[in-house]
Image (tube, rainbow, N blue to C red; front, top):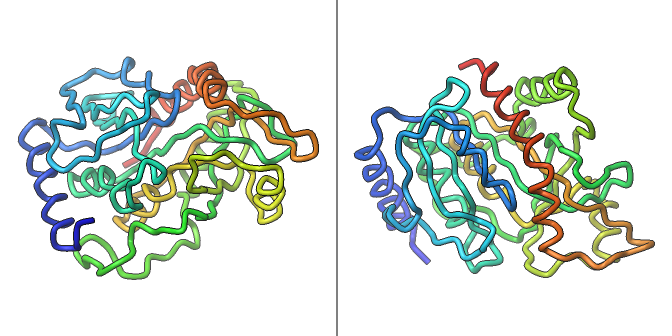
Length: 279
């Protein structure tokens, strides 16, 4: 694992490389999760960089994650789309998982829209529910801000009293209602290490501590985005709902299929959010 100086140098090398390949810095970053890789097709693409091309970028080992950084214009906003992410369960540290977010923050991004697929814990949710993050719980056992702080990147102890931008959350919920999108809710997301899926007892515990949906991603990226001063909106497709009293086998291929089925609604919501986004 890199020390802090090596990490800083790696981030700066990636920033310099990307800056040399794009005409203008992006305003917004969108990270697409499991089964949610199609949004780039709606974009006026300026440049596509495979993760392998970018110095020091991690490599995605998950087949449902394309592994491209796409720059262009989406709904009138200069946007960078991360098609696919990295996960703690792949063997990366939380800091490595969040590496792309740090790079894009230093490139000038001011707003981050982080998406994922999750398992529902709230019994009122249904498969396909779009959940707007109201809060999160980090059960990963790691934090991307651990270690010496680089003061130029953010303060040592970032405040998380309102981790998700209230105006962005309100905009997302208002637009969902205006567009007539069904099954849209607010909730708390909990991040667990994985890759094993939850047992019935773990499901009860996670619900007991206040989580509405569970997944294996996003929190490291969100913490770095907040540390960097970005406005953050979290959106999750609830692919299945876990009832610990009548537990059914959870299969990852079914989660991916459910996420892809809900993707058009998520894409519609994101495009409308971008169109109304104020700088």
